Image 1 (cartoon, rainbow over the protein chains, first blue to last red):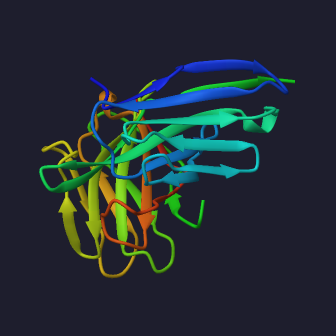
Image 2 (cartoon, rainbow over the protein chains, first blue to last red):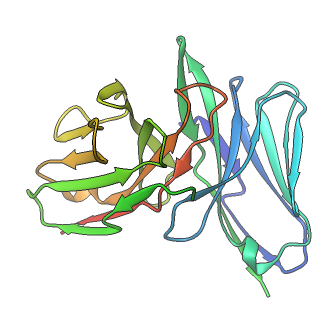
Length: 113
Length: 116
């Protein structure tokens, strides 16, 4: 089973529309990261959230981490074709005293012009 | 992507051959991570290395796979006797800090391995 569940798996929106991507874990996370991956390329770091209830914004992208640090959402306002790509959430979990980096399966976003 | 360089970008190998993937971290970063991404799947952690040391290889298959990060030169992920199931995108990331909770990893563009 996937340790980090992302939803939806894919999303197609019309340019200018708002959208939200969710990332959920059954366990408390120590650090939640959002990355964007363009098709066939590497990952670009977007934002890091650490504290419960934390919210960060960069341009038209806002990410939140819930109080329990088990769920995060990424919200894009007024989407543009440049927002298209795969959005991955990554997190750090404490596994028996060892930190492990884990990633969700990604959300594939298409923005129609 | 903050300067992590991976090469080659694409690698084609026949079954039974060896694949060598290289990763040069961001200048000054001494912590390197390797991940594998299979189609329709997320990134899977393989190994975490510091200079000259393997710190965590819990995600790496026990056979045919090895990794190193020598004092000089890039980190190398080596896959011996490749099989079709090894076909995937392999990503390298580096960080300036140790493997801690508050740590941003910078990713390379990946090496896409195809095994014929």
